[in-house]
Image 1 (cartoon, rainbow, N blue to C red):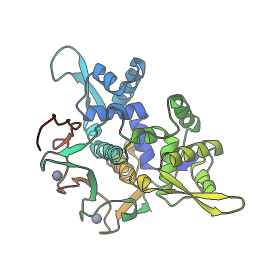
Image 2: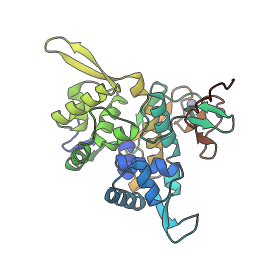
Image 3: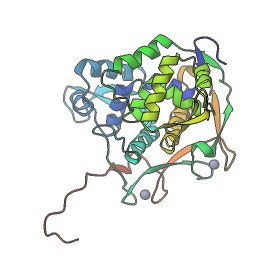
Image 4: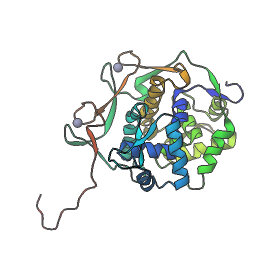
Length: 316
Ligand SMILES: [Zn+2]
Ligand SMILES: [Zn+2]
């Protein structure tokens, strides 16, 4: 059981503190698609001007973007991913892949991906850098790392984040950024990776208020990420389990965790060590093409254009 106002330390939480809310995540996704100018970010994300200004400032302050002269020339400064920002490519690929697979593409997000080396439409797959075996929730084992323990959280801040975004939020999550952009939702999902399924146990692990937990569980069940399982008849009590769609989020969390441990944020040690069951080695994730199993990089992944309609009378 966690001490008051403390939750289990997590590198994912650490990563998301650096990356920021849903707007920040949408901005980073666009930066990976080559967007660098303020007005283009605005057009692509739909962020109001003030919001975009403050989010770009926070991404620069956190070392994910840098502001410098435009590559295209001219007096205007543009925003480019730093080395630390570029290293979020794996998690970005997985977020896109999840959206494509589960029909939860971010507005204006890529509808499909192509591996230019093999020329095929594909989905990125996370494999182990040691044995090339697939990396999934069930293929991994979690051990406490040197930085394991509890950390104080600013509950008020976590709470407020969700409320400020609640006006426009449907009662379902729209995409990965929607889930990880709301910290409580992300934290509730992460308890599943540690085998915590019952309401009271999740509440205790996160020190989360009952009404907030009920709300986030409802959103996750409505979104098909969690399923309820009855384990006691009277009164009815439920456990919460990840669905197939929910389990498919695991590589995203793992990519963020590995990223946070590679770029020691606040100089902290890893709180969890993840090993791959198949080879017993600490996981070093690698993204490969589902079709040819060759590694994916920023230079060999492009977006699939929306299907063009065949002209009338055209033969195949
Ligand atoms: Zn392995
Ligand atoms: Zn390929």
